[in-house]
Length: 289
Length: 289
Image 1 (cartoon, chains in turn purple, cyan):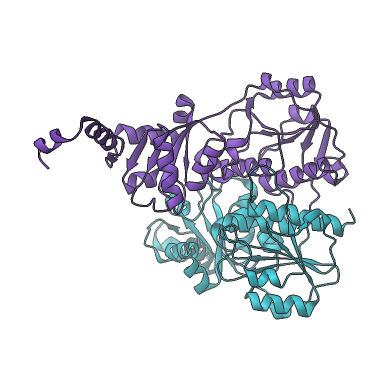
Image 2 (image 1 turned 60 degrees about the horizontal axis):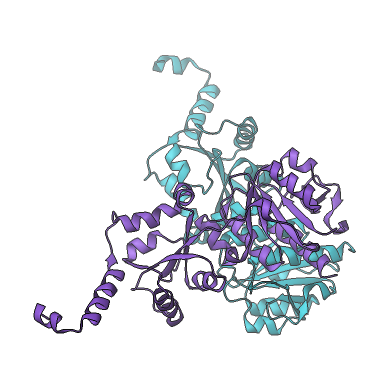
């Protein structure tokens, strides 16, 4: 094709073709600023600075769309995006005006923890709810976690929270980041539907008191077997970190402190499992079982 | 010190000093065969060939001793083993005749997944119980898992199994390796106290039938809400893999198929959390709650 031929095209086709080309340029240089901007979202600083985070995989992108998550842009590895549903998602998002970047396989690979990347990912805007704006409904239940260390555990907890009908998750302290790639991955898309609240320990206790929610703390030294608990609504389950449990201040402000009984030489179980057992117990009480 | 001085030492002191030197030689070359032998235990092949596995950290070593796990040798990074209890453990094991190897920091680092290695690790012999030798006691309950993909999930499950009084764990299919470093780490020492049985799906169903155990399978398509289950003892809870669930053959041979109810757009929760919720339910029934 020579220049003359191009000039013979209708103007509109020519322009749309150029735009198509620009949108779909393959980024393959590891110092390309567009790639570096994406990669920076893997770090806490990058996420904090921009208020954005990364998701990867067809299921995650589909659930982000389903929950109207604010998708800012797409990144695609065309060499591995073979799934027809995944290609349809990409097409649909591009058509709705979401910018899309094509990456070479090694660059795409760097942006995901997945063992088998699926060739479609997105940049999404973080969603936070200010604590002052939430008034718990009468029979709602909430989850509060203090400084969970492992983002994988946090993501797993967010997934169970959706399954058990938790109204929202309060993250006490600044350590836990639900938008860390490992948390996002473990949440399996439940992140998009959850109300997330960042607060200090003081803000949490003020909120719980003013909203009339009963606070159920979990601790290995709790006096009450968790099966003996009878929930008053609204309720909030309060979980501590893997290593240090709950801080004394928070423990003191709770209405009940429950323990999971344990046999053998176990003095603790995984925090995501413990949260799951307790959330299902509260869920069962709410559904009258 | 010159040769003459050495010859002036009492014979016994001299020999014990030499042995001490040998035992505590610092291995720092990455091609040292003693280090390579340790490192090979991080691979499935290395573990399969030798029947050994690695543990790391004070808690793990202490619990291995507590449960009389067959410790074969120790490996130490003297530059980071500062904890007095950890040093005491090392001393006690060496005194009882367990060989010990001192490693340089970079080599030691390669043998552990821990973010903060503790400077003491051990090689332990795997313990497997043949399926033919187990006869379930009348009110015992067992756990069977089919091809769990993530060793971290498997280790977390083993930890919850100890806490809830599971009599033993049957691993159906050859994929799941409880001695994988990530499984060992997540089990937090519960591995040592658990009876572990490797079997095929056919061996499992034959065993369940002949032992009279009721088989409770878990599936998102199960007809019975898990809270409606009334256990008959002995019982065995049967869990499938993260991605594929239970194979049809195993599903068909179960006495009950229970599901965990889920709200939101969740169609599944993490397999270690689901196992935890179900194990606690069965544990509660056994303790009459």
